[in-house]
Amino acid sequence: MFDLSRIVKAYDVRGTVPDQLNETVAQAIGVAFVQTLRAAGETVDRVVTAHDMRQSSPGLAAAFAAGVASQGAGVVEAGLASTDMLYYAAGALDLPGAMFTASHNPAQYNGIKLCHRGAKPIGQDTGLVEIRQRAQAIVNGETPAAAGAGAPGSIERRNLLGDYARHLRQLVDLSGIRPLSVVVDAGNGMGGYTVPAVLGDAELPELPLRITPMYFELDGSFPNHEANPLEPKNLVDLQAAVRQRGADLGIAFDGDADRCFVVDEHGTAVSPSAITALVAVRELAKHPGSVIIHNLITSRAVPEIVTERGGKPVRTRVGHSFIKAEMARTGAVFGGEHSAHYYFRDFWGADTGMLAAMHVLAALGASDRPLSRLAAEYNRYPASGEINSVVTDQHAKLAEIERQYTARPEASLDGLDGLTVSFTDGSWANLRPSNTEPLLRLNVEAADADRMAALRDEVLAVVRA
Image 1 (cartoon, rainbow, N blue to C red):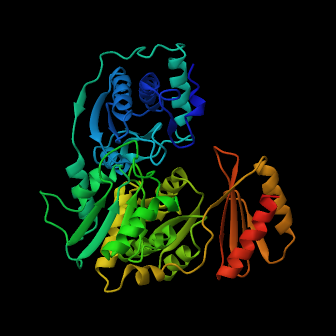
Image 2 (tube, rainbow, N blue to C red):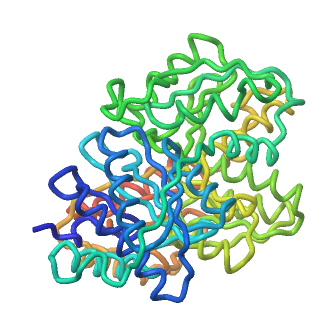
Image 3 (tube, rainbow, N blue to C red):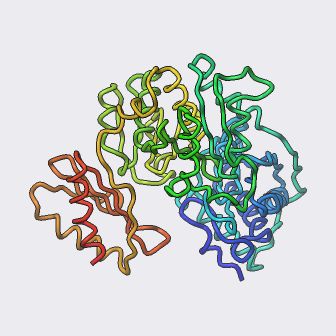
């Protein structure tokens, strides 16, 4: 018996194939998806689907489509796509959507990212719990899958790659920049499919970019390295290639290409906080005075720079559902996270690694400085990066940290997401529990490296005692 509570997470569906997620489960989720949206009062005439390059993805997507069609709704199958391409489809076609991907997870995993029409997110507070409950009843045989469905909906196949590429190129004009040499590591993921279409193809004028492709072959077994650039070991090949070729920069995408990571001409990783600030400045130049969203563990340089440029920074919890909710509530023009997710109002408030990469290319191409010097403007404070610690009782450790710092006059505490301790000298530490593992995640930042290291070690000494 499949226990869907093990694979339906806070924001999406994610599990190993076939023991946790298979075509039977995918079909039940397709049925439950339509039923849940209709029960909430939404009209569901059609649903758009897409999938990544994993071996199991086409079968799961087809099973889901069969479930949707059994409820009398049509399906637009976009086929191979990055996750942000599915968001484009849901926005441009104004349809609810489903993307079949496990993002950066290893080859044995797969998953489903669901969204309302217009690419609005679906998470545990916006329908995902109800979808899981309905799908579980179907899998258990408690509810007939096609009850009251009527005639099945039609399924049409539609290639949206060209439309997606044209849309992005309308948002960021790269035609007038100086020539750039760019190494792109797709990690055998979907960036290998979308990068050639967006950054130069037969239909559109060539851009002043000399792209050196790395691992563009679509291969869900990830033969070269995991498609997770957040792990430094997975950037090693890109960094070496940038230095060897004397390239201006390197760009790495994760498996479903909704995140991008950047390295400068020396092969040094550019902080996602610096990228957030850089893109925020560009968006504020187009939309003066706008709101910019940042999560609570991005560098404090981000709200500082946003304020200096006349924008309004808004701090939120970590996680795309919180970012997207704040984007909608505030009308923010842009939002960024430490994990290299970047969200754009011009892209239906959804995240797109490709558009963020294009902003970096545009900024660098309009400057006569190398990326290392350009990024230095936005990279003001030393940071620890995210440090994970295994603990047996997350809440007890958080309470211990809280007791330690509550009585210190130079410290202030808040509980927006885990526990953040901020100090009068500008340094801060955030400790957040993982939702899925017995981990506490620590991020620390300070005005200088010595203070950052001291605060990091002080907190870790308690966490790991």
